[in-house]
Image 1 (tube, rainbow, N blue to C red):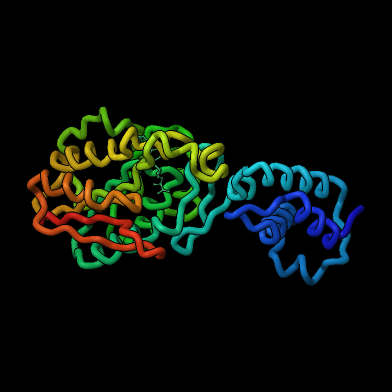
Image 2 (cartoon, rainbow, N blue to C red):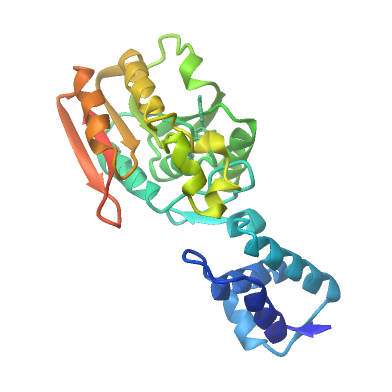
Amino acid sequence: MVTIEKLLKDGIDIIKKRDYNNPNLDVQLILSHLLSKDKIYLHVHRKNEVSNDIAAKFYEMSRKRNEGYPLQYMTNSQEFMGLDFYVQEGVLVPRPDTEILVEKIIKIAGKYERKINILDIGTGSGAIAVSLGYYLKNSAVTAMDISDIALKTTEININKHNLTNIGLIKADIFNYDFNNEKYDIVVSNPPYIESDVIKELPIEVSAYEPKLALDGGDDGLNYYRHIVKVFKDICKEDSILAVEIGYNQREAVTEMFNSANLFNRVEYDKDYGGNDRVITGYIR
Ligand SMILES: C[S@@+](CC[C@H](N)C(=O)[O-])C[C@H]1O[C@@H](n2cnc3c(N)ncnc32)[C@H](O)[C@@H]1O
Protein backbone atom coordinates (compact mmCIF):
# COMPACT_ATOMS: atom_id res chain seq x y z
CA MET A 1 0.00 0.00 0.00
CA VAL A 2 1.23 3.47 -0.81
CA THR A 3 0.18 6.91 0.47
CA ILE A 4 -1.42 9.70 -1.55
CA GLU A 5 1.63 11.86 -0.79
CA LYS A 6 4.03 9.29 -2.24
CA LEU A 7 1.90 8.75 -5.36
CA LEU A 8 1.75 12.49 -6.08
CA LYS A 9 5.51 12.77 -5.69
CA ASP A 10 6.18 9.72 -7.91
CA GLY A 11 3.76 11.02 -10.55
CA ILE A 12 5.60 14.34 -10.77
CA ASP A 13 8.83 12.41 -11.29
CA ILE A 14 7.23 10.37 -14.09
CA ILE A 15 5.64 13.27 -16.01
CA LYS A 16 8.47 15.34 -17.47
CA LYS A 17 7.87 19.09 -17.61
CA ARG A 18 7.38 20.44 -21.13
CA ASP A 19 6.38 23.93 -22.35
CA TYR A 20 2.68 23.32 -22.30
CA ASN A 21 1.99 20.73 -19.58
CA ASN A 22 1.68 21.00 -15.82
CA PRO A 23 2.83 17.78 -14.10
CA ASN A 24 1.88 19.04 -10.64
CA LEU A 25 -1.71 19.66 -11.66
CA ASP A 26 -1.88 16.58 -13.91
CA VAL A 27 -1.01 14.14 -11.11
CA GLN A 28 -3.60 15.67 -8.83
CA LEU A 29 -6.29 15.43 -11.51
CA ILE A 30 -5.38 11.82 -12.34
CA LEU A 31 -5.51 10.73 -8.70
CA SER A 32 -8.69 12.73 -7.96
CA HIS A 33 -10.29 11.00 -10.92
CA LEU A 34 -9.21 7.53 -9.78
CA LEU A 35 -10.38 8.13 -6.21
CA SER A 36 -13.54 10.02 -7.29
CA LYS A 37 -12.58 12.81 -4.87
CA ASP A 38 -11.73 16.47 -5.38
CA LYS A 39 -8.22 17.94 -5.19
CA ILE A 40 -8.73 19.31 -1.67
CA TYR A 41 -9.31 15.74 -0.44
CA LEU A 42 -5.83 14.78 -1.65
CA HIS A 43 -4.23 17.54 0.40
CA VAL A 44 -6.25 16.93 3.55
CA HIS A 45 -5.66 13.15 3.39
CA ARG A 46 -2.02 13.09 2.21
CA LYS A 47 -1.11 10.31 4.64
CA ASN A 48 -3.99 8.01 3.61
CA GLU A 49 -3.03 4.82 1.84
CA VAL A 50 -4.64 3.81 -1.44
CA SER A 51 -5.21 0.29 -2.78
CA ASN A 52 -2.58 -1.43 -4.91
CA ASP A 53 -5.06 -1.56 -7.74
CA ILE A 54 -5.54 2.23 -7.79
CA ALA A 55 -1.80 2.80 -7.37
CA ALA A 56 -1.08 0.58 -10.40
CA LYS A 57 -3.65 2.49 -12.49
CA PHE A 58 -2.16 5.79 -11.30
CA TYR A 59 1.37 4.82 -12.41
CA GLU A 60 0.08 3.60 -15.76
CA MET A 61 -1.87 6.80 -16.38
CA SER A 62 1.07 8.98 -15.36
CA ARG A 63 3.30 7.16 -17.85
CA LYS A 64 0.67 7.62 -20.57
CA ARG A 65 0.37 11.29 -19.70
CA ASN A 66 4.14 11.62 -20.01
CA GLU A 67 3.85 10.31 -23.57
CA GLY A 68 1.49 13.22 -24.31
CA TYR A 69 -1.84 11.41 -24.00
CA PRO A 70 -4.42 14.13 -23.22
CA LEU A 71 -5.56 14.23 -19.61
CA GLN A 72 -9.15 14.87 -20.69
CA TYR A 73 -9.29 11.51 -22.49
CA MET A 74 -8.23 9.80 -19.25
CA THR A 75 -10.70 11.60 -17.02
CA ASN A 76 -13.43 11.76 -19.73
CA SER A 77 -14.13 15.30 -18.75
CA GLN A 78 -13.67 18.89 -19.90
CA GLU A 79 -15.38 21.99 -18.57
CA PHE A 80 -16.82 24.25 -21.29
CA MET A 81 -19.18 27.20 -20.84
CA GLY A 82 -19.59 26.25 -17.18
CA LEU A 83 -20.82 22.76 -18.10
CA ASP A 84 -19.06 19.43 -17.68
CA PHE A 85 -18.61 17.66 -21.03
CA TYR A 86 -17.91 13.97 -21.48
CA VAL A 87 -14.97 13.64 -23.88
CA GLN A 88 -13.19 10.58 -25.23
CA GLU A 89 -10.47 9.63 -27.68
CA GLY A 90 -11.77 10.29 -31.20
CA VAL A 91 -13.28 13.72 -30.48
CA LEU A 92 -11.63 17.11 -30.17
CA VAL A 93 -11.26 18.36 -26.61
CA PRO A 94 -13.31 21.61 -26.48
CA ARG A 95 -11.09 24.70 -26.17
CA PRO A 96 -11.64 27.90 -24.15
CA ASP A 97 -11.29 29.96 -27.37
CA THR A 98 -14.46 28.33 -28.71
CA GLU A 99 -16.39 29.86 -25.80
CA ILE A 100 -16.00 33.21 -27.61
CA LEU A 101 -18.08 31.80 -30.46
CA VAL A 102 -20.76 30.42 -28.14
CA GLU A 103 -20.94 33.65 -26.11
CA LYS A 104 -21.35 35.60 -29.35
CA ILE A 105 -24.31 33.47 -30.44
CA ILE A 106 -25.93 33.64 -26.99
CA LYS A 107 -25.70 37.43 -27.14
CA ILE A 108 -27.18 37.60 -30.63
CA ALA A 109 -29.88 35.00 -30.03
CA GLY A 110 -31.07 36.66 -26.82
CA LYS A 111 -32.64 39.33 -29.04
CA TYR A 112 -34.92 36.92 -30.91
CA GLU A 113 -38.41 36.55 -29.52
CA ARG A 114 -39.32 33.69 -31.84
CA LYS A 115 -38.00 30.15 -31.63
CA ILE A 116 -34.68 29.94 -33.47
CA ASN A 117 -33.22 27.13 -35.53
CA ILE A 118 -29.48 26.73 -35.14
CA LEU A 119 -27.16 24.47 -37.14
CA ASP A 120 -23.75 23.48 -35.71
CA ILE A 121 -21.51 22.08 -38.46
CA GLY A 122 -18.84 19.70 -37.12
CA THR A 123 -20.20 19.30 -33.61
CA GLY A 124 -17.46 17.04 -32.15
CA SER A 125 -18.26 16.50 -28.46
CA GLY A 126 -21.31 18.74 -28.91
CA ALA A 127 -19.59 21.55 -26.99
CA ILE A 128 -21.17 24.32 -29.10
CA ALA A 129 -24.54 22.67 -29.79
CA VAL A 130 -25.12 21.47 -26.23
CA SER A 131 -24.08 24.81 -24.69
CA LEU A 132 -26.42 26.69 -27.05
CA GLY A 133 -29.27 24.26 -26.37
CA TYR A 134 -28.66 24.60 -22.64
CA TYR A 135 -28.49 28.40 -22.47
CA LEU A 136 -30.99 29.24 -25.24
CA LYS A 137 -34.24 27.64 -24.26
CA ASN A 138 -35.96 29.18 -27.31
CA SER A 139 -33.65 27.29 -29.67
CA ALA A 140 -33.85 24.09 -31.68
CA VAL A 141 -30.28 23.04 -32.39
CA THR A 142 -29.14 20.63 -35.09
CA ALA A 143 -25.72 19.12 -34.43
CA MET A 144 -24.02 17.72 -37.53
CA ASP A 145 -20.87 15.63 -37.82
CA ILE A 146 -19.42 13.08 -40.20
CA SER A 147 -17.93 11.06 -37.33
CA ASP A 148 -19.86 8.35 -35.48
CA ILE A 149 -17.86 8.78 -32.29
CA ALA A 150 -18.51 12.54 -32.33
CA LEU A 151 -22.25 11.97 -32.63
CA LYS A 152 -22.18 9.31 -29.90
CA THR A 153 -20.29 11.71 -27.62
CA THR A 154 -22.71 14.54 -28.39
CA GLU A 155 -25.62 12.27 -27.51
CA ILE A 156 -24.00 11.46 -24.16
CA ASN A 157 -23.65 15.19 -23.49
CA ILE A 158 -27.24 15.92 -24.52
CA ASN A 159 -28.44 13.31 -22.02
CA LYS A 160 -25.98 14.43 -19.34
CA HIS A 161 -27.58 17.88 -19.42
CA ASN A 162 -31.16 16.64 -19.91
CA LEU A 163 -31.76 18.54 -23.13
CA THR A 164 -34.62 17.87 -25.51
CA ASN A 165 -34.00 20.69 -28.01
CA ILE A 166 -31.03 19.16 -29.90
CA GLY A 167 -31.18 16.85 -32.90
CA LEU A 168 -28.32 14.97 -34.55
CA ILE A 169 -27.44 14.53 -38.22
CA LYS A 170 -24.68 12.25 -39.44
CA ALA A 171 -23.48 13.90 -42.64
CA ASP A 172 -20.54 15.03 -44.70
CA ILE A 173 -20.99 18.78 -45.12
CA PHE A 174 -19.30 18.56 -48.52
CA ASN A 175 -21.97 16.20 -49.73
CA TYR A 176 -25.28 16.76 -47.99
CA ASP A 177 -28.69 17.74 -49.31
CA PHE A 178 -30.47 20.05 -46.87
CA ASN A 179 -33.68 19.59 -48.77
CA ASN A 180 -35.04 23.13 -48.28
CA GLU A 181 -34.21 23.16 -44.57
CA LYS A 182 -33.48 26.77 -43.40
CA TYR A 183 -31.69 28.03 -40.29
CA ASP A 184 -31.67 31.32 -38.39
CA ILE A 185 -28.12 30.81 -37.20
CA VAL A 186 -25.36 28.64 -38.66
CA VAL A 187 -22.33 28.14 -36.49
CA SER A 188 -19.14 26.16 -36.98
CA ASN A 189 -15.73 25.54 -35.53
CA PRO A 190 -14.50 23.54 -38.52
CA PRO A 191 -11.14 21.85 -39.00
CA TYR A 192 -8.87 24.78 -39.94
CA ILE A 193 -5.25 23.76 -39.50
CA GLU A 194 -3.11 23.64 -42.62
CA SER A 195 -2.36 19.96 -43.35
CA ASP A 196 1.42 20.45 -43.14
CA VAL A 197 1.28 22.28 -39.83
CA ILE A 198 -0.47 19.52 -37.86
CA LYS A 199 2.76 17.62 -37.21
CA GLU A 200 4.28 20.75 -35.63
CA LEU A 201 1.54 21.07 -33.00
CA PRO A 202 2.14 19.84 -29.42
CA ILE A 203 2.17 16.04 -29.21
CA GLU A 204 -1.11 16.06 -27.24
CA VAL A 205 -2.79 17.40 -30.39
CA SER A 206 -0.73 16.00 -33.27
CA ALA A 207 -0.52 12.42 -31.99
CA TYR A 208 -3.78 11.97 -30.13
CA GLU A 209 -6.55 14.31 -31.32
CA PRO A 210 -8.41 13.23 -34.47
CA LYS A 211 -6.94 14.52 -37.76
CA LEU A 212 -10.51 14.73 -39.04
CA ALA A 213 -11.15 17.48 -36.48
CA LEU A 214 -7.99 19.42 -37.35
CA ASP A 215 -7.13 19.18 -41.02
CA GLY A 216 -8.49 22.08 -43.06
CA GLY A 217 -6.59 21.14 -46.25
CA ASP A 218 -3.47 22.67 -47.80
CA ASP A 219 -4.29 26.26 -46.84
CA GLY A 220 -6.55 25.36 -43.88
CA LEU A 221 -9.51 27.06 -45.54
CA ASN A 222 -11.39 24.23 -47.30
CA TYR A 223 -14.28 24.13 -44.84
CA TYR A 224 -14.88 27.90 -44.82
CA ARG A 225 -15.10 27.97 -48.63
CA HIS A 226 -17.75 25.30 -48.54
CA ILE A 227 -19.66 26.53 -45.47
CA VAL A 228 -20.18 29.98 -47.02
CA LYS A 229 -21.56 28.25 -50.15
CA VAL A 230 -23.84 25.99 -48.11
CA PHE A 231 -25.04 28.93 -46.02
CA LYS A 232 -26.42 30.61 -49.16
CA ASP A 233 -28.82 27.67 -49.63
CA ILE A 234 -29.96 27.31 -46.04
CA CYS A 235 -30.28 30.91 -44.86
CA LYS A 236 -33.41 32.96 -44.29
CA GLU A 237 -33.66 36.67 -45.08
CA ASP A 238 -32.14 37.65 -41.71
CA SER A 239 -29.87 34.69 -40.89
CA ILE A 240 -26.45 34.84 -39.29
CA LEU A 241 -23.29 32.84 -39.99
CA ALA A 242 -20.60 32.68 -37.29
CA VAL A 243 -17.38 30.68 -37.53
CA GLU A 244 -14.30 30.20 -35.40
CA ILE A 245 -11.07 30.94 -37.32
CA GLY A 246 -7.34 30.42 -36.84
CA TYR A 247 -5.26 33.38 -35.62
CA ASN A 248 -4.08 34.25 -39.16
CA GLN A 249 -7.24 33.55 -41.16
CA ARG A 250 -9.23 36.79 -40.72
CA GLU A 251 -8.36 38.26 -44.10
CA ALA A 252 -8.96 35.11 -46.17
CA VAL A 253 -12.26 34.24 -44.49
CA THR A 254 -13.46 37.86 -44.69
CA GLU A 255 -12.78 37.74 -48.42
CA MET A 256 -15.00 34.65 -48.68
CA PHE A 257 -17.77 36.30 -46.68
CA ASN A 258 -17.54 39.42 -48.92
CA SER A 259 -17.51 37.45 -52.17
CA ALA A 260 -20.73 35.73 -51.17
CA ASN A 261 -22.50 39.08 -51.71
CA LEU A 262 -24.87 38.16 -48.94
CA PHE A 263 -23.82 39.94 -45.80
CA ASN A 264 -24.77 43.43 -44.87
CA ARG A 265 -22.31 43.50 -41.97
CA VAL A 266 -19.35 41.42 -40.73
CA GLU A 267 -18.05 41.50 -37.15
CA TYR A 268 -14.90 40.18 -35.48
CA ASP A 269 -14.35 38.94 -31.96
CA LYS A 270 -10.98 38.35 -30.39
CA ASP A 271 -9.87 35.47 -28.15
CA TYR A 272 -8.21 35.82 -24.74
CA GLY A 273 -4.83 36.13 -26.46
CA GLY A 274 -5.96 39.12 -28.54
CA ASN A 275 -6.23 37.20 -31.86
CA ASP A 276 -9.26 37.47 -34.15
CA ARG A 277 -11.09 34.25 -33.37
CA VAL A 278 -14.70 34.59 -34.54
CA ILE A 279 -16.16 36.07 -37.74
CA THR A 280 -19.89 36.76 -37.82
CA GLY A 281 -21.82 37.75 -40.94
CA TYR A 282 -25.29 39.29 -40.74
CA ILE A 283 -27.59 39.25 -43.75
CA ARG A 284 -29.57 42.08 -42.17
C1 LIG B 1 -12.49 21.45 -34.91
S1 LIG B 1 -13.62 20.12 -34.59
C2 LIG B 1 -14.85 21.02 -33.67
C3 LIG B 1 -15.55 20.18 -32.63
C4 LIG B 1 -16.49 20.99 -31.73
N1 LIG B 1 -17.48 21.71 -32.51
C5 LIG B 1 -15.71 21.97 -30.87
O1 LIG B 1 -15.74 23.17 -31.17
O2 LIG B 1 -15.06 21.53 -29.90
C6 LIG B 1 -14.33 19.85 -36.18
C7 LIG B 1 -15.38 18.74 -36.28
O3 LIG B 1 -15.78 18.66 -37.66
C8 LIG B 1 -16.05 17.31 -37.98
N2 LIG B 1 -15.93 17.15 -39.45
C9 LIG B 1 -14.79 16.99 -40.18
N3 LIG B 1 -15.08 16.86 -41.47
C10 LIG B 1 -16.43 16.93 -41.58
C11 LIG B 1 -17.33 16.86 -42.69
N4 LIG B 1 -16.88 16.69 -43.93
N5 LIG B 1 -18.65 16.98 -42.46
C12 LIG B 1 -19.11 17.14 -41.19
N6 LIG B 1 -18.31 17.22 -40.10
C13 LIG B 1 -16.99 17.11 -40.29
C14 LIG B 1 -15.00 16.54 -37.20
O4 LIG B 1 -15.40 15.19 -37.02
C15 LIG B 1 -14.93 17.36 -35.90
O5 LIG B 1 -15.80 16.82 -34.94
